[in-house]
Picture 1: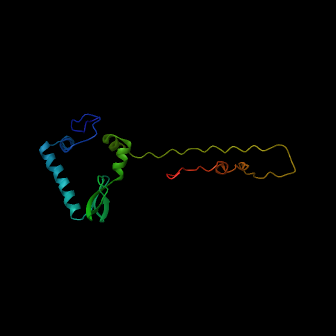
Picture 2: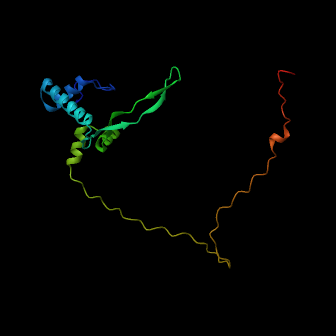
Picture 3: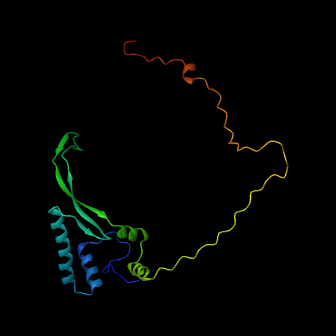
Length: 176
């Protein structure tokens, strides 16, 4: 398995910008300076497009777009007082299906590429086994069998109202 994390130790939960640049340089076979320029150019292009109101769709990876947030009233958690939050725009990212599948499987990209290139083999047809016949009673009776539904459980015996048996509690007031 090829290490594409740019020298990161396995199990780290984060990849920072420098590590991303190193990983891009390793995959592209270029020097880190060129990879840094390319990574920065991609991020700048996405931010400029979304800021101007355009949607950026990277097929399989995801969609970057802008969403309008209406004005609302929030609460200050420290004081509990209402605070007016003005309307504004916020960036949004929605994950693509290929990205979701990759994360769900945790697959190595090299293995996935090989699987995509391999021709699909026709699925072997399963032979169906004949259904077993239901056993029938050999006894002959004059009455026809009917589809009897499961017997309904009888209602539970009525319990008397427990509240009626208990005497009412008397609360002692301040004046007594």
